[in-house]
Image (tube, rainbow, N blue to C red; front, side, top):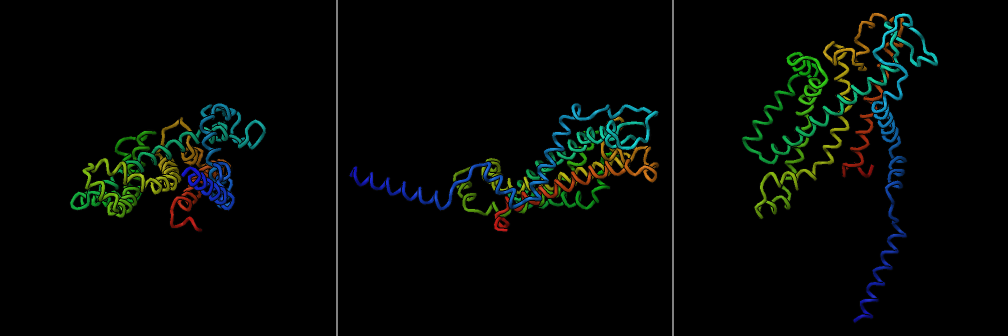
Length: 306
């Protein structure tokens, strides 16, 4: 018996060694490198996002000047060693405003996306799992929210509660909530008919336990993709609110606020005042969109073979 057991273990070891030779296991670093080769645009976008986040976190160390300090003696300066992007109509350093503006714009976009996606996903899961009249009532509310154009909904909410950073975040969260809820609801409708959900009901699991332990893990990849794609839109919406005068009040620097200040009348004669904040918004939105597409291709089983 011992010899047979030893022979069986040796056979299993040989089979395992052969599989490792044919299909070697890759470590995390090797997997990231392989993903970077397959998805170069998504990798570049991820690096740009990390740089922007680091720039926002370490803004006091990166920005050479106080972004709110006005020096009329040095207004409309061009790019130089002291002022990388020049100065605006009040003599404020444009580069410092871009760096500090990343804090506000990224914080508003990422935080609003997290809140809106989480609440929308929870509502969508509950709606899809419950079905019946509960699902109908919740979806009609979502339809009512989606019926309003995004910018109109944001203008209504911010005008009602007043412009501030957190009010803008909550307004963006409300605008994000319906889309996330509808997508997750569709996936929850599919998951709730699986056999393991039926088994959980048979053994007496409560609905909240089924949602958190069985439905949520199966839709978490979709939640991550929705969040990554939505951040870019949230940053753009915050910039649009600032451009319309309902963004974060001055003197807090924001990318959208740089395009809506009194210096806007000087854009024709000093194009750099609009160029740099516009480029910052464009690069941020494009990077998050590319990263979201990459995550969708990686996490969606139907697209992994592409």
